[in-house]
Image (tube, rainbow, N blue to C red; front, top):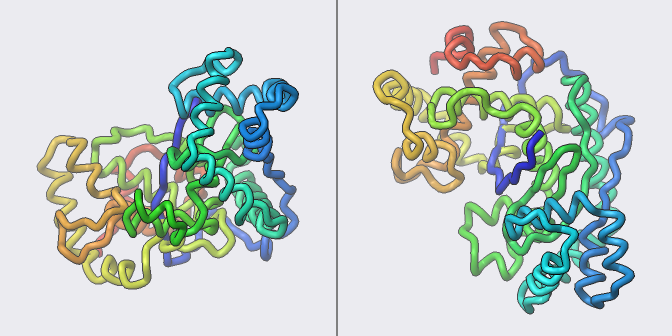
Length: 335
């Protein structure tokens, strides 16, 4: 799996559905614990002290994490060079960023009970993914601080959360840089949902055309459907950060949305701009003044849920069916 960077995800689902031969294990069950590795703390100790012994610990104990971070921040893989470490310490020593970093590791993410809840939810989710997809790889999980850049970085066998993007929607610095619809995703409760989605998407990437509206809708719908099966009482709204009112709006306008989308699918060639606007978390004012974001995710999930009900497929069969037209046809989706 190639190194990938996953930025903010905005997904949510409110109707639970059967399928995938799911079974309940209770609240996190007996899932094998996945420990969260505190790379964030070690890196901050070095930034704060410039201690050469701590630097050697970073180099010897976290080589892959340093390489990932260098690629994410500087588009550089020179994680073993003096130039790299000079850039790294200069980057994190900027006063506002250093204050943000300190808030991240001394706030929510220094609370042992909060970290324990994070590990339990993460362990449960990956245990469910392993049950649904026996061959899926389970990553080592780290925490880091990106300086309000990517939410999550993913590389072969490694997943890391940028905790400075999950400090709570009322964190003061967020008010200066992010809109309301972005801040609602920047809460600790989203971190595992985003991580599971990022990992699942990296293990099973889109096989169709990203610019093709139907391909993209069905793919996003598949990922959301599987996440509902993997999470503990996850819903569409939770995964997509959609309010109950916005979700009800989608239900009321589902038929109109589908007719509009179907016309585009039938009459237009794939177009990146047209397709992308259906998957943005910002309000979909191109469709209606009161429309929420993520309309394509909503319709894609509804089609996939119908397909799973009609075909009784497993999640593994679903994820490997890359024929969007086949899924649409067999879903008998008619809102």
